Image 1 (tube, rainbow, N blue to C red):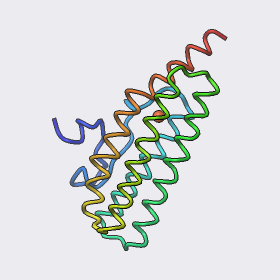
Image 2 (cartoon, rainbow, N blue to C red; image 1 turned 90 degrees about the horizontal axis):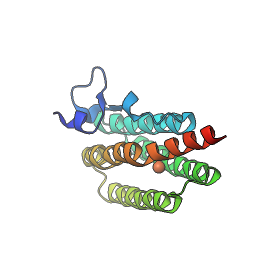
Image 3 (cartoon, rainbow, N blue to C red; image 1 turned 30 degrees about the vertical axis):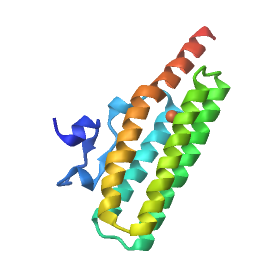
Image 4 (cartoon, helix red, strand yellow; image 1 turned 180 degrees about the vertical axis):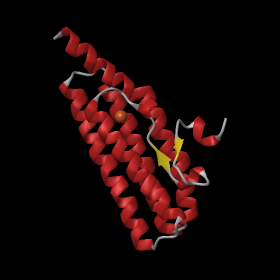
Length: 156
Ligand SMILES: [Fe+2]
């Protein structure tokens, strides 16, 4: 199995390595429209960041691209947590903790990038840490939220 397939990712057309971009695959769909559209945007922003790293963009562009991803991650977690509360999701506290831990990881990643400024390393870290976390979190945790909401709707 290739590295990308292991992460549940699709290689972007024209890319010669997994580092050159990550794409959304339907297997990551939770079935909840709001969650899925935000996850797709997260993947787009992650892919933009990796592309910016490997295509040798200026530090200013990289900083901005990284900022977009960080800001959107925070926004997405906030929306997803609000959705859980709205639907009385029983594992809210646990899920929020996972989000908080990941926000801390991203904070460290940004600090590390600011300290050493290596775009190669940033692309690697984003690929291994961010993409892997997102993929696992979506399939193992976010799927449960979507299933809970579906059950609630059925109960009417
Ligand atoms: Fe989540």
